[in-house]
Image 1 (cartoon, one colour):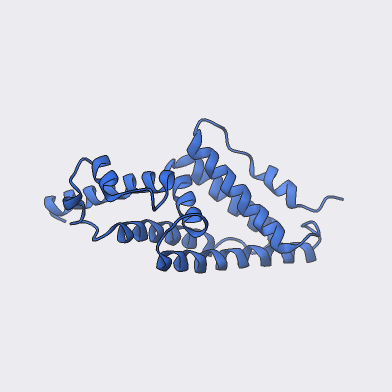
Image 2 (cartoon, rainbow, N blue to C red):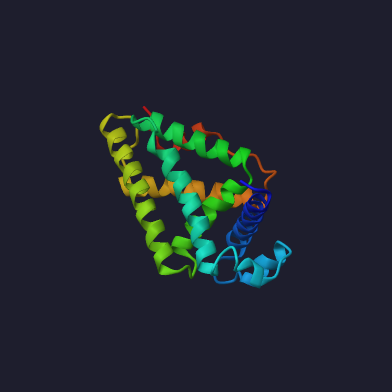
Length: 194
């Protein structure tokens, strides 16, 4: 890659990182292209050389986040408690090691539920999260059958686990100095106790 192409790639990455910060803080509708351009110290016109629209920029961020989530969840172990332990260890380690990770998580979750994100993006996110939710619910049911996970509605327990991640990500973004919980604290809530 030549110097010019390398500089263009660096600038594009800078745009993506600032857009992530703004979209995850303000939401899709409240973030303007001019806000992103100002944050990276360029004109809105120049920014449009990198992304044709706010929707394209937002879509690129969502795609990066979903691709990462899908890759990381693809090879998790199959047994229920081990699966949840690996999943939460992975997410919490990612949140600890990369301050952008909780922002990416919130960007994706908010786009699905609370934001005026373009419908095509919402469909993409919903498909991905439906698949992940189903995998998690299947692990809950299997764990209940094996006597490892408490008897309760499987959808409710799965929703609870996602709610834990939502709250943890929100805390990381609001105050990165707050220590993250331990995986076993979360698992203890869903484990069946004798």
